[in-house]
Length: 450
Image (cartoon, rainbow, N blue to C red; front, side, top):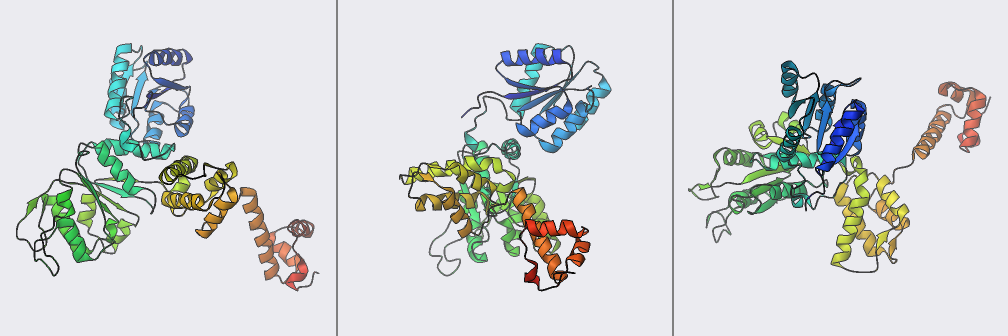
């Protein structure tokens, strides 16, 4: 599925130039948004990430170099083209050293601009003709996820090892599959293995294969996953749980591109791209000597960190409805949608289990629902049964804290209002008002008011 239009963000404090460039680019089929200052551009970048940013160098307030630095922090894969009426060699050199894609001088030559723009979009994998099928299973409107996917698309074109980081349930295997689909290895096999799900000897056999008679029960030779993934991709999930002796053998495979099946004296050439993943802190494991440093650097050529669901709440309605459609397609029934207040409840939940937990909850509510619309009460019940409590509103949280605080003071002072008020740094009148607001009975603290 191709994108409709490439999104261009223009930044310049000259209204006439903004209008001229917008007209030119829109005439070429691009979707254009504008910002008259660096600050406005960064605000728009957070709301709706573009595919390319074109900024003036000299502007009041935040200049083009300031915009560039901020973009590199927020969206490092976003290409930036810089323009200026004060072009000079030092400016161009400085911009190039900071990572700007191209440096153009005013008056802007239309053909040069379009040529540079097309090249920037092509190099970054953001051109409107780019095939988006590789990431079709990753449902998102989150700017954080969009930037992550842009980086994933860039590294997919190379053969470097990738380490995916993130909490359990964030979708690390789904991202690994997407990277495989976007790579030149897409037509070959993608195989996955959880390194923490089996004992050491079995894990070694699964990875590297074994010869006939290598151990009790090895009645035939067995091809390992590295051979199965030859010319393709092997995904090693929970790499932090790999036994230390196997880490040495995996390192050798990465270095020499050869495996030796268990019980065999022959080596086998393999060409598999390795993507690994972990939810644990590998750097802490390094410090404890539980994970090999040399293997870590071999696996961690590029690292991509998936955000937890609580940091991409704008995706929750999309994901919930996507999962609902998938579940209904497998087993058609009477359920059709979520009630609006049920969706609000989903958005406000903390989601310690991330996307995987959300899918399980949708599946549970569909199974238990007796009406076409899933009500909030059923969602609330499912959240509670899963050990998830809905996040309170700010006012509710503030009130709860205030009440708990007052109760704690009265417990400390044995119900002595004067002492409790002094601890709270409030006068007695204000303190009594707070007690009345929260309907706190002084008699319950069995102290005497003075």
